[in-house]
Image (cartoon, rainbow, N blue to C red; front, top):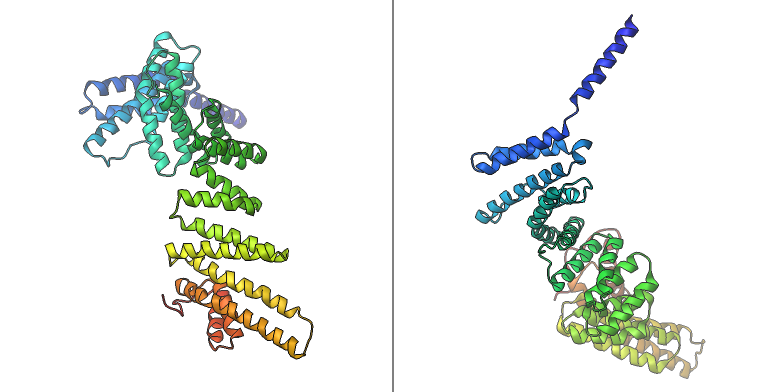
Length: 441
């Protein structure tokens, strides 16, 4: 008997659950009535709009309402009206916040579902198109706001929907805010850019490729395609695009810098010098370019030393010094440039030290004389490096490489400052921080 009672109880619970399921069609109609009541007197019936939102949201949890074009139209109208209310508040207070994250997007997606519903009646499709006309511009404006806040995925979704809206409107001979080719192509670009910034590289490539295939792609399109293809691991295709972009837009800084970064990554130092010089012509106040070009020549100098090509070594050393010096002239407090000048002489001294240590033992007067000359040359180079490292330490007292160099030079000079810089060096190595510099600006 107990088993029978338990079974009946279970049946009653199941029946209660079925009875509790919302009626999607009824709720959608109620939402429409609440919205209509709001329209009659928005000021006195403000709560009716919130009521409409609650009912249509509940309705759209049911499969019944999801299959109704009219329910989707109602959802679009509710969210579009909420957005219009919020925008009206902004007319009075520009800092007023929107009640939803992107009600324009919710409205558009609802209208789109209604429009694409195979069971939609002609007037329902017409209502959906009218709704899309109202929200398209808001999709773009909210997308811009999302982009500026760094919410790139949300910006992409809003921008993408503005393009989808354009396609629907033009298919129905309706005016789109992207009516001119220039407006439409610009929206394709920013949509691709937002997707790229959100690491949605396949989606970004789709929009960039659409512009590329027009045959008149702007430099930003080539730069965007190059970046997305590299992110997707398609380096060969990326390089083809970059080369084509550079050929078509040789004066564009963005493509030039992309090429410079590629050459840096692949170690094509000789090719880099001309590109960096072009970049300096375009941005003569960009200190980083001078330092980078100095580094390139510095590396070429070191390679020439290994190759025992003294003529090239001298040429590259001179060029490295020139660009590092130009950087310090433009910005005396640029620690990278100041340190690099010191390192240039320091490394040259290190090479000479190796040559000196490789000399055969020769205690004749001639042999000792040659050894002394080389020691003097080494110390002379360290002395030339010293002021730059002192300056670098005054700008950054915790740079490990600067402290190593100062400790080494003062030790070689048998200067008591070697002890001071060993202490500072050990402090940084142990995870500490030197609160003040030893040398002053």
